[in-house]
Amino acid sequence: MSYVILALLFLLSGFFMKYSDDLADVNNDLMFASVFGVLCAVSSAVATSYSVEAAYIFLAILIGNFLAFKVDGIHHIITLVLFIVISLGLGIPELNLVILLICILAALSDEVGHELISRVTDNKFLNLFFEYRFVMKIVILLLAIYGVFNIWIFVCFMLFEIFYLIAGIIFEKFN
Image (cartoon, rainbow, N blue to C red):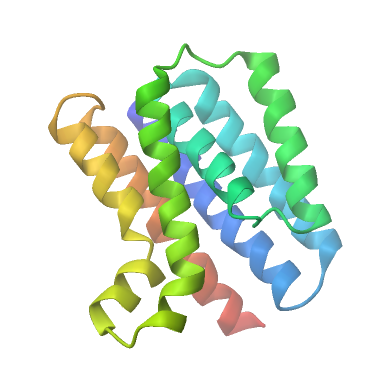
């Protein structure tokens, strides 16, 4: 799969993920949150099935959120089930468990830090670091620098992150 298509899948996934969460968390609109969750599941699962690097990232995000007890609504459950069904239907690339574990720990650290760090410290750097979930970004960059991932997957992941933020901005503006 070309990196252009993969980049499109990443940015769609990031946008749909955030918009789904905001619809559920802010508006309590589980119907439309589920619709955007389905779109997120489809884009993430297609990327997962066609790129081993995307598989590491999206599976790590899924497992990290699950372990952090962030799968907390019907929209998340629908998204999770559909992601699994599509990924298994299309096929998941063979993964190295050590690399997957590194990515899972990064995603879990981001989720736990995002929820807890501002409660335990007033350190502005740490608060911003975890507010914007930098652990996963650094880990993906390091995996690219060391040749485990292609550098383009880091670019794709940054598009995911940028469009996650854009979705939040759009949601706030039109909500």
